[in-house]
Image (cartoon, rainbow, N blue to C red; front, side):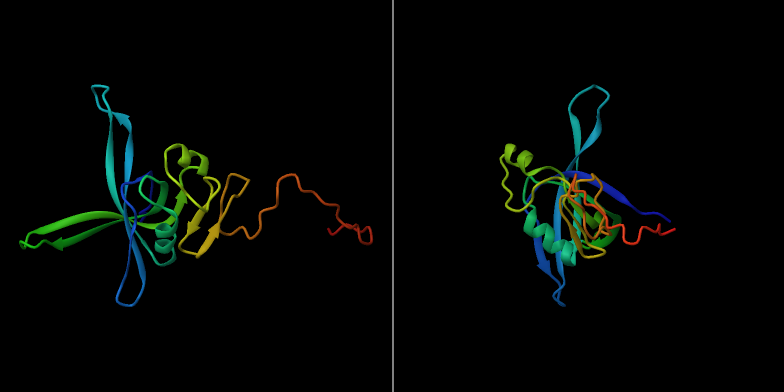
Length: 168
C-alpha cells in the first residue's frame, strides 16, 4: 500500500509547538495550498487549507524556522482521525503527518513578500525527520539526506598517481 503526499503552500499562522506528557515535541500548522486549476467559469483559483503535524526534531525545525506566510513544501502521509466533539457527535479530520519539510522559497523571495527569515539562504534547505539530518544549499539541485559532503562547484584537485598502476 502507498500513502504518500507532497504539498506546497504558505503557513496560515505561526506553528504551534507543544510537548506530549513524555516531552516529545509536536508542531501543528496549516498550509494554504492553491489548486492547479480555476473553476469552470475561469474565475479565481480555489485554495485548500490543509492541517499538518510534525513530530520530534521536525517539529522543532518547523517551529524555529517557519512562521505565518512562509512558503513550505511538506512530504509525508495522510492520516484520518475519528473523534467525538463536545456534544457527543462523531467527527473525522484529515491531516498530513510530515516526514520531510523543505523551504519553498529563497530568502530573497521571502523578503520581497514582507517576511523575514534569519537563517536560510535558498530553497533547497530541508530537514529529514526520518534520519534526523539537516541539508543546506546543495548546488546540484537535488538534496538527499544520504549525501555526507557536497563539493563546491568547480573545485577540482589533482589526484596523486601513486605508482602509476591503474586500480582495475
